[in-house]
Image (cartoon, rainbow, N blue to C red):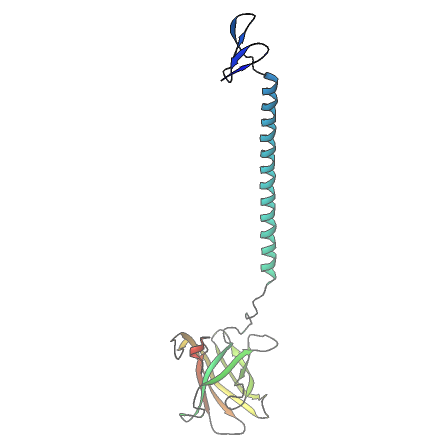
Length: 215
């Protein structure tokens, strides 16, 4: 492809043109000013891109630090609602009530052990939830050995005194009835003021929290 101009005819893109006055091909001189401007614009663009990247990296780092500090702050403020001083002994249980080897209820019933409002390590509530003999008493607890007892405690369900002996929780001492999940077990001997002379055995296993293990 050739083009025409006031100076002559040249090949497009070849960098040469025909000089009529000199009767020869001459090389086109580069537009140094234009090339210099383009080069400076490219350098400016690269500099701006580099600055933007650096600024973005700083923003990401600062954001990461803020998120980390916020997470640490929240973690320190959060408390485990189940982490009471008697947490190792607090649970729900499926228990039986027996006297002289005879089951008095038929099927295991729900029984509960939990911390007192003072949340001290040496005190524990025993609550049969009115499912057995109908008693709720506060006993002395030993979380280290997971034992509990009381010589004479006031029943909160109705007005009698209750004696609890040889109370203990056996870690991994039981199984869920259907799933076979390993759970803790519980045992105690109870005497009641309105039935002097008789010692009742309350024993069972912790709830596995699987529905198929509930009674």
